[in-house]
Length: 246
Image 1 (tube, one colour):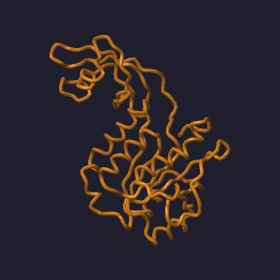
Image 2: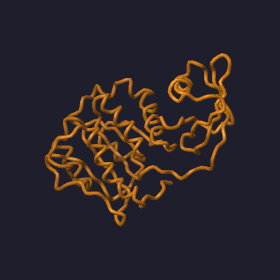
Image 3: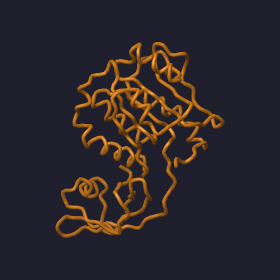
Image 4: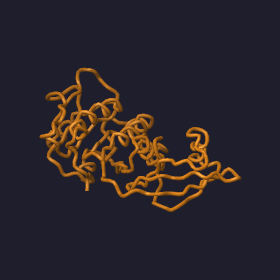
């Protein structure tokens, strides 16, 4: 991790010796007394924590916080067909690191319903979003929901945009194209589950104005397609076209 995220901008806190964050400070970062370590508040400011190791192995941290920095999440709403838990874990971490603003996992016609019963969806999913955000040296964490299908995803998405894209290696009308600085707009990007789309879902996507695009002839894993597609769409924001999300 490149910084630690905490819930609120406190003046100080103490971590127990067995806390995994204290262990990381001691064994990985090798942080000594008086050393300053990078911290952030979830959806808040960044700052520095001054390390003070106590005799019993606990660590006391004294904070100095910077001003609130702009929301740096990308205006991309990413919908992903519910896949194997290990696949969804990778997507949660990488999507948070890339900075998508919204994640929606939906049940798909060809997906396995039991995947939704995984312990991943109890508490672990949020920890993985935090992990990805910390890796990116960022504070703003994507929102994340799990819904029954595409209809519900459309109804709960906080994005109301005209640019709607869906990946499909078999029936795409053309390749996914990077946006330019002149065409930067909020986007809903939909990726199917590991077995792809049913005919009914393709019809639904077309009827709801989603353009079917491909990433070439190769069939990619869901998590690989996600990183490639988000990277293409985000390149315009990275080059200076990004507007902060309100």
